[in-house]
Length: 160
Image (cartoon, rainbow, N blue to C red; front, side, top):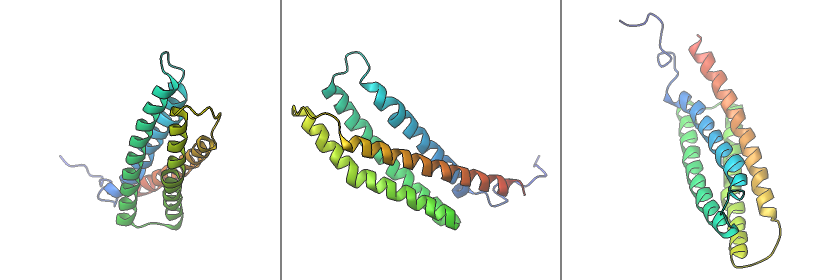
């Protein structure tokens, strides 16, 4: 038995529109889980030394960065497939720029800082960590804005 109501796909709500919701939502979950929860708590766990914590962090954040790059490529593909309005384009552009800054400018600085600490440097604090936290915060805001825009679009399409 078929439904008398048109399906979301029949109304133009394709995988690309759904991807506009799922990708930012998953990416936000990644940021919350790793950057906002795991990273600060890691060094409070019993038995985690600074070298061990830094080694774990280096691997986790490398993997996270690779996943973020894949998410961004998928976000672009979904945007190109469905077309973009001006606000969505600015949002995706902001996400791309923040990801680029994080990947190309900040991560190498953090890596050098980690190397220095592991080599026995006794420097305290790091501006690279503050820069990363700042970019991560703005990336979170940009992704949340994309999620809101995508959800509104989905509701508009499926309620016709």
